Image (cartoon, rainbow, N blue to C red):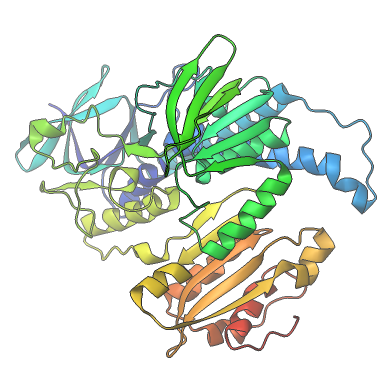
Length: 476
């Protein structure tokens, strides 16, 4: 007889492993199935985020930031390192160690919470006796579960007709594993992933050119933030070509040639020749191999799984979360959905508010935001007030020598409810959480303005931006 479970989670990325743990905490018998392989062929829990995404990229961003600061900034602090040198193999080894630590940490959490783990690829076989039968290959056979959560994540989107070889034409996987520093590096796509990976290799010595199809830089962010970011990144040596259409990509033994032109006019074809090319043009839901058609699981035009506001699919007892469904493709969004679905299955009231999911770009300066931009508020016809505060006027930022950027707050002009908070500068990946908390409780800018913040801290910039909404900043 197949093993019987209350809940089967397909995928052990951030959404999947968190859903499995929360389900087990609530008394369900849970199995989590994941096919990711380590270099040795064993399981590597954590999905894209842990293995070739969030975690290794942040490790390299941290290491490369330390390197460039050693070369260019420490002398200002009276620390002179005349013999500083780069050891890329050691840097990559540290990144791999960080990944393994996270892999092992998830395995430990499964054991602690009594989640059973199966290494393999799961697909739907049938529904029988109010349970779902899942085939797990290779070798694990058939499992049965009353409820199933699909958390299979996403894959990098290739350019049409241009396959990833992870040698010359790289996805995020290859871009994080380069064993030498390319003299010239091209990046197609100047979104979050392109900016982070481009920043890593620019800091380490590559000449980096980013080609972006959209006419405006970082259109997902607030326009004022995007302008400040473009200025900062250009000063760092990143080169941007905006509003372009890629006509052709040719990979040779030692180089990649990219032909592109102005997307609006179709004129002025240009050629970019680089040693390696990172393609970062978005991600696509990973539903291949689930056998969705076999059981009638509804998919959308992207290949993602169709769900309602509670992450329920069209099939009884089947749920889907994270990158494989609608909404932002963010690890923390997947985690929130995983917890909420596990709680719903156990009879509790799970909750996710997609309007307060924070976005972060882990470059230097960092970029973070939550809620609506000025452009969105104007398009909706909503009256608002705006306040901002520069890090150049923040004592802690000046002491650290990191004064680029500002915090901007948008609030309803009548109720004063905070509608959006946008930041660029030092440590804003951490500061944004205060804005998320405030917006989750529908706080006003006045609420934040009247909360005492420790001095001197970067967080004071958030309070000052709140004060600026009412035109009463104290330090500008």
